[in-house]
Image (tube, rainbow, N blue to C red; front, side, top):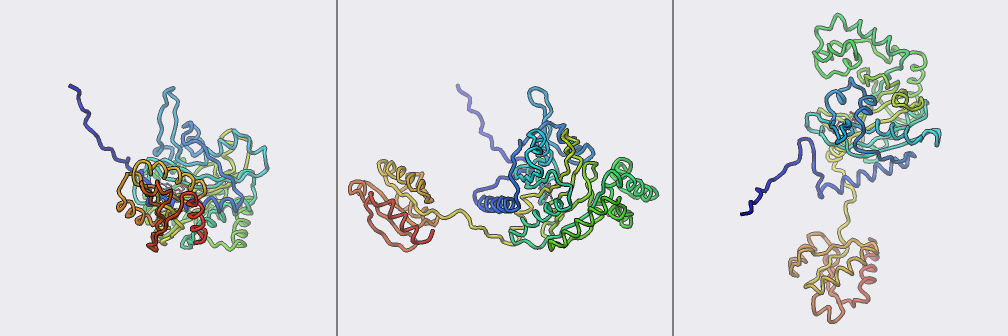
Length: 431
Ligand code: AMP
C-alpha cells in the first residue's frame, strides 16, 4: 500500500511579509517615484548580490555594531565559506565600486540602490527581518556640497511624495584628528557617572564610548544630557566642513536640528552624520540615516576615496504614505475583457488578446472557462471598459459582440475590424 504524505501548511517566517497584489500597485508606484527622483539628481542604479562574504560586512559595518555582533544571517555554504545575507547595502556597493574600478571611470560616482535587506532583529511595527532599503552613495568628493547633495536627495524623495512632516537631525562626528581626544574628554566626563549607566553602556565605555550618547535608556540619556558635544570639539578642518554643510543646507532652504546624540560610533565614519525622523512612525521613527564615510573605501581595500551617502527604509516610507493616504495612479483597469464561450472561441480569444496586448492595451481573459454571466460579472468587478463576447454563433458569422460595460451598450463588430475598433474606442477616451 502506498503511504500518503500528510499535507503540511507553511507560514511565513517571523519578521517577513508577503506583499500582496492589493498593495503591490502602491509599492511599484513608490519605487517609480524613487527611481525618478534619483535620476533627476543624476544618480545611476547599481544592483549588487543579496549575499556576500561575511568578512565584507564585518569590516564594512564594524565588529562592534549591533548589526554585525548580533543581527546578521550568516551561514556556511557547501564549501564551508562563511556567507551573509546583506544587512545593509553600502558595504556591497563599496565592494563593487572597488572591484569594478568605477573610480577610474569618472571623478565622482553617484550610485543608488533599492532592494531587500536582512537583519535578525526583534520584529515590531516598522522593524522587520526582511525589509527593503533604498539609498545612495557619492564616491570621490570630499566637498561639503556632496554631503548636501546626499541630504537634499533624500529630502527630495520624501517631498516628491508630498511628505513634509519630518525632521532632519544633523551632527558631525569629526575625524581621526578630533575624535580620539573627544572620546577621552567624554570618558572623563562619564567616569564618575559610570555606575548610573546601563550594562551595555558600561561595556561600551572603553571601546565605543560614542555609542553611549545614542543609548535609548532613560538613565543613560539623563547622564549624557549635559555631556561635552563633539560638534563643539571639532578640529579646524572638520569645523570648517561642518560650517559649510550647514551654510549650504540653509542655502538649499533646508531646516535641521543639531543633535549631538547622533553618532555612527565607527572609525570609518567621518564628519557629517544625519537622520530623517517622522513623528508618524511610533518608536521606530527613523525614515533614513546617512553621512560621510571617508575611510571606508580604503578599509575595504580600495584607493583612499571620500564618500557620503544614506540608506532609507521602504516599509517605513510605505507606513507614512499610508498615514497621508497617498494615492498613486494604480494598475489601470483592463481596456478589454475577453469572454470566450467554448474551446474554439477560447483559441480565437487567446490570439486576439495577444495582439491587443502587443498593441499596448491592458487585456484580461477568463481563465476558468466560465459561463457568460459569470464572465461578465468578473469583467465588471475588474472595471473593464469592454467585454468581447464570442461563442459558436459569433465564430460562424465572424463577428464579435462588443459590450461597452459602463454604458451597457452592445454592438456587433466584424473580426477584421475588431482590433482597430477597440484601439480607436480606447484612444477616443484618452486612455
Ligand atoms: P540603518 O542602515 O540602520 O541606518 O537603516 C537605514 C534605514 O533602514 C532606517 O532609517 C530605517 O528606515 C530602515 N530600517 C532599518 N532597519 C530596519 C528594519 N529592521 N525593518 C525595517 N526598516 C528598517
